[in-house]
Amino acid sequence: MKLNIFNNKPTQLYSDLKPGERIDKLFVDFVFPVIEPKGFKYLKSKREFKKKNDFFDFHISWYGRKYNESNISVEFDIFINSFSPKYRKWETDYYKLDKNWGNAIDGTRVDYIKGWDKEYYNLGWYDLVKYDNAKLMDKVKDNIENAAFRFFDNYTSFDSAIETLKEYPIKHFEKIIDFYILQDKWQEAVDFFENNKQWHEEQEELEGEDPNSQYSLNRRKPFELRKKALNNWLQQKI
Image 1 (spheres, rainbow, N blue to C red):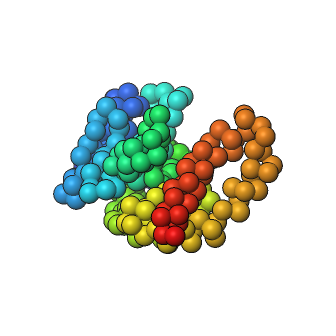
Image 2 (cartoon, rainbow, N blue to C red):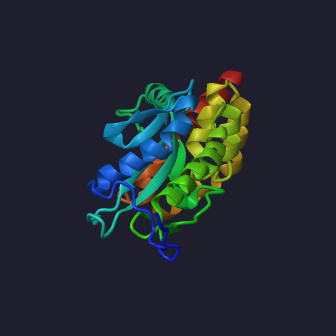
Image 3 (cartoon, helix red, strand yellow):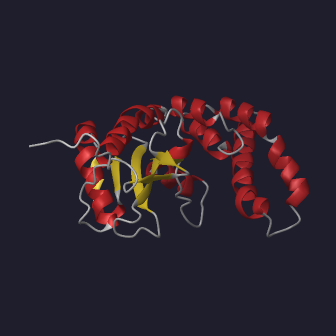
């Protein structure tokens, strides 16, 4: 058998499958064998791997680009997230919310995950048509074993989560306070509130009179609920 050493055409795996099925198959073949022993489950309908822990759940999910077509365009992106259904239930009950505000604790697309090696990753997408599929998926696997798992390490305890979330204290203001409260660290929660409340007070001055402003719709109520809880604790101390 003669080898064509001048053939630089990238290896195309499962090119007979539809783009979505092809992407799923590659994740199951390349990534799942590495993370299954670490407790991850494959949720086929959601296109994600998920690991349930005591308080924080870890998610690795992917989705194909809207305009993927056969072997013309087969692009996908990946998200790394930490969720906590237990926290969201506690939040709903503790603050007597009308509904569960069940968004992620932290996470984003891999473009913004610290330490993610972006080889084969262009403008927010991996492209199976453009690159050797085995090399590309090996790189994805290595990134998940390294950058993704370092991200997950930040959510092994309340304290590690707080230290991580403090990198963006305004964005994660409510969660940080709640994670202190959940540990009965009320004074730490009060201190954090006092040191980081300025942005909310400034937004109240700028946008508070407009009921349709982003602050009024999304940030005022969570802020006021934490403020009330902390004030109640302070009153009990008197």
